[in-house]
Amino acid sequence: MKQTLAQVRSYDRSVQLLMVNQFTINLGFYMLMPYLAQHLSGTLGLAGWLVGLVLGVRNFSQQGMFLIGGTLADRFGYKPLIIAGCVLRTVGFATLGLVDSVPALLAASAATGFAGALFNPAVRAYLAADAGERRVEAFALFNVFYQAGILLGPLVGMLLTGVDFRITCLVSAAIFGLLSIVQIRALPARRAAEAVSPETGERESVLSQWRSVVRNGAFLLFATAMIGSYVLTFQVYLALPLEVRRLGGGGEFGTVAIALLFAVSGLVTIFGQTKVTAWCKGRLEPGQALAWGLLSMGLAFVPLLAATALPVPGGGLGRWLLAAVPPMLAALLLALGTMIAYPFEMDTIVRLSGNRLVATHYGLYNTICGVGITLGNLLTGAALDAARKAGLSALPWLALLVLGLTCAGSLYALHRTGRLTHTSPEVQLTAA
Image 1 (tube, rainbow, N blue to C red):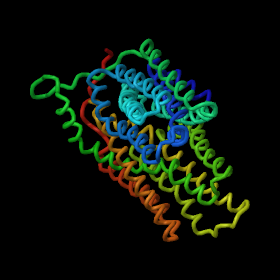
Image 2 (image 1 turned 135 degrees about the horizontal axis):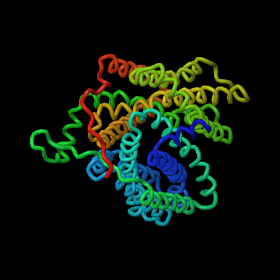
Image 3 (image 1 turned 135 degrees about the vertical axis):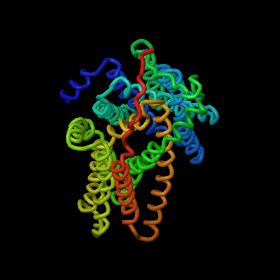
Image 4 (image 1 turned 90 degrees about the vertical axis):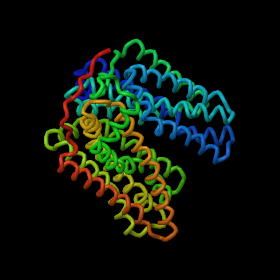
């Protein structure tokens, strides 16, 4: 951990602040969101479909608006969009704790989602700009802070929600409010060079910029191939907990085992990310690292697939081991695959953009992957239901394994054909 902190201190102040900001953003977000559904259905007594609507509005307003957020960041600068997102999330989280009418809850949920669409592309584009040639290492450190926030947030939220969920909302809002003030005072202004039309020499319109991004075929192929990584890693929140509860039951054992899944994934990343990235960078080309990362994610489901060939014990220690060990191994391999791929993934987006309209590229990339996650989860859920009805418990794990292998093969093919390397001259970024 000392080595990680020493690496962080070797970067400019702006990069250090962005990493701390991301930890704080995830801390405030994950202390609230895991407990929102219970608050809506339990404390407020909303029907299940209304709970789903409120949560769905948040997800749609974030995933569907990433392109808008990235475009605004490229046109008006990264700092204003980061601050605007934090301020909007401050208002949204405070509102979630203070209102009980459905229209107000929907508005607050939409605000919290749109806030993420504003600051996520801007933060990554800003980090890529100021890290320069050390982008890969910077994104590895960024992921350490990212995972630390995910790990600590639910623990803090559990303590606060044990008193009152409204306190959780207000504390989370206060964190984002404080974060807004810190960034206003301490974060240097940074923006990309203006995108100028080669024909007219004038500033390009938004539609013209979007057309140039959409015409970037290599980028779109890369984004499509990377959808699988997000579908696979999301199974830590979907398929793996469902499998633990299917075999281990919904009592205390199931709760503890699921908590361990999240803890293992986060801790492995916090303590191993920088070492894994250094090893990969010294031995692999970026495209190779991406392919190996996706391969590891696909192979994560082999322990679960192998476990389906074993007889299910009627109870006791044997059943508990069968319920906990294969999902735990899967979580470890998914974390390893993410550690391998993530820094090179973020760097590849910058390279494929030619360092031009970077935030817009990040925004479209997040939107494409977000749509893929939604469809992937629907198909995974359908596979889980079909497996239970037909008695084919291996079906979902086999499908996820094939998905990982297919995406790994696609990325390797893009690497071999040179489509993950952009050769156009980079547009330099300037301080505002």
